[in-house]
Image (cartoon, rainbow, N blue to C red; front, side):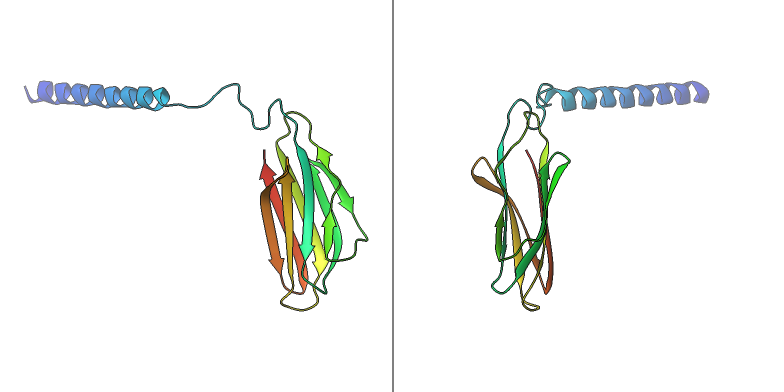
Length: 140
């Protein structure tokens, strides 16, 4: 009799656990907002501009920027501001990245990099100190 009760108890527990798992699976999938046809940046190109602004007395030296692993290096730069030419991304592009190095006038110097997409500031990165390196990345 004890074996029968234990067997029934285990079977009942197993069924209850399986039912809870099934209900949990159905409940989690029913609220799934994923659009299977949506991919970041899919079907749309973007106008992207990268900018850098350093504090007074600093000197921007080099910038590496690009969209989806197609980097461009701008070297032998000078001054406290820099802006890339406007880049039109391919439809379906995933992200934009920028990294800029500069030499500051002193330890309290700053460098700010920006990613502008379709005329809107989307991402910003900063650095401070005498040797400045700022970067930013934006996913479309």
